[in-house]
Amino acid sequence: MYQNVVRQIMPVCLILAQLLFFTGASFAEEFAGINFGVGLALTFKHGENRVESASVQNGIVRVDKESNRTPKVMFETHYFFQPRHPNKEALTNWGIGPFVAIQPGDSGGKVIDTYGLGVLIGFRKNGQNGNTRSSWNIGVGYLVTTGVKILGDGIEEGQPLPAGEKDVRYKETNQPGWMIMASFSW
Image 1 (cartoon, rainbow, N blue to C red):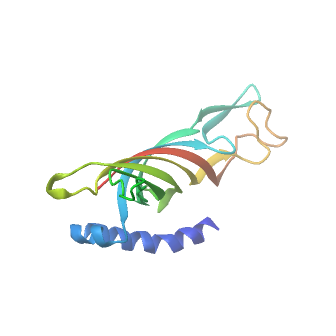
Image 2 (cartoon, rainbow, N blue to C red):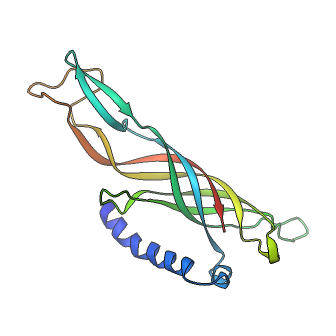
């Protein structure tokens, strides 16, 4: 299921990346107010423990290393709605709106490692030559990490291996979670 979603999203991401990197600054100002950024996200798992390694000690399964809170560098795109002052003037130094973020995959063949969406608050920085597009942002969101390794079916931490098993088995799955992200947009 997730592979189909990735196959549909990838062409859009590639087109947006080409437009971002191979066009001038005027494009960014004309592209429906959408901005791009890079951020550092701290992710929190939702569901079973992410297991890096496990072993059997005295017949009991022990998790040697898990990664339930993982920092990630993510690319994000967002749109900010600007609040209005009671006299109807737009407050242009900050905004709030939705964002979509991805973390590219590693050399193991995954195109996208993590993808998510959420709400971002941005504080604009007055730039040189009147450029106010850059901002510092902070947000929260929901994400899905692909290819997460967890203990195999029937194997539980702190319990003996099931009958007939000699080694710890793992399985890969897509796991939902939450993120807190700080980003910088240009």
